[in-house]
Image 1 (tube, helix red, strand yellow):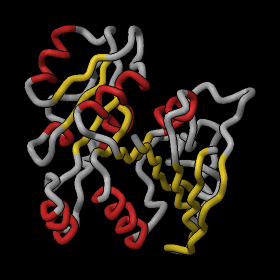
Image 2 (cartoon, rainbow, N blue to C red):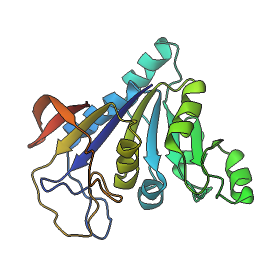
Image 3 (cartoon, rainbow, N blue to C red):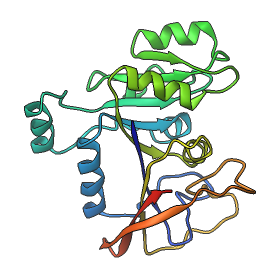
Image 4 (cartoon, one colour):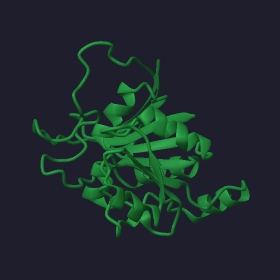
Length: 219
């Protein structure tokens, strides 16, 4: 399995404001870059916080790219994956529509009735006790044929994936703005590392939309 984390952040490393509102950090060129990565992936992964805050669809927007996927014998759209320990994904969420297959990864702490309700609209993957065991959950996704995963956030999920040693590559658009705020979400939220910091190797830097895209490989 290959796990690629893709994100856009401000020059000071923030994903959005302290109010956790969506902010246009990048522009059309970066949106197209993200769409291209989605089109090359088996699945797009987000955490429940992103679903509750943004209600994303996580679909490929370019018709030529969906047609290219079909020609390769793949579904027109990559699958969508939500990491949702407590099963809080709203049943009316866009990510549960019929545009693509959806997987919801829950823990045993998710109420049975929530799991059953979600199972009517998605494939439910149960892994872990109080929170999703990401290694086990991703192993289940791999068994289902999802071998190339694009992770789009948020910061809590990204930190947890690095903590579990599951990330292979990190691509970050760094935009030309400052957001600030000690409570604003960052690229890798969560408890933070105090030792054994993940080591990255810079593979590429490209100018785009007034900022830069940095591609890092995880050592």
